[in-house]
Image (spheres, rainbow, N blue to C red):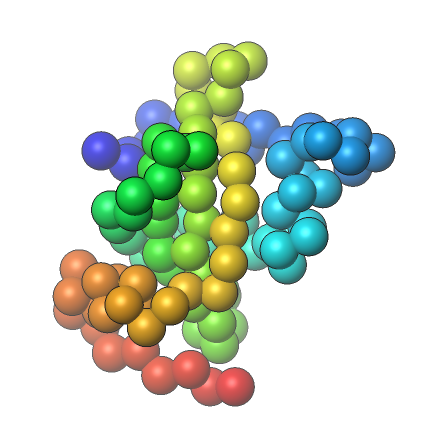
Amino acid sequence: MFDLSKFELIDWDDDYDEEGNLVHCLRHGVTEKVVAEVLRERPVEIKLSVSSAEFAIVGPNCEMSKMWTLLFDISHKRGDWLRPVTGWSATQGQIRAWQQATRLPWRNKL
């Protein structure tokens, strides 16, 4: 179960590491700012059939203009670090899961 309070830090690789998680996430439009905002703005854990991550969450950015799906692992460096794996714009089904969990409406303002 995803519990944000268990994590002290977000584990990003250097931006010059072409195989690192930051460069990979940037290719999908997921910036450090996006991750920070989604983690701050009512993230909800969802179930996805993925083998590349331990957690999948859905949540909005701080402007409430875009909903994101983000995948995370626990860092191999420290157990209290959260490591972004990848992400994308949330699908309608993922947005519905967020709405059901938060009991909040969602309207994309863009």
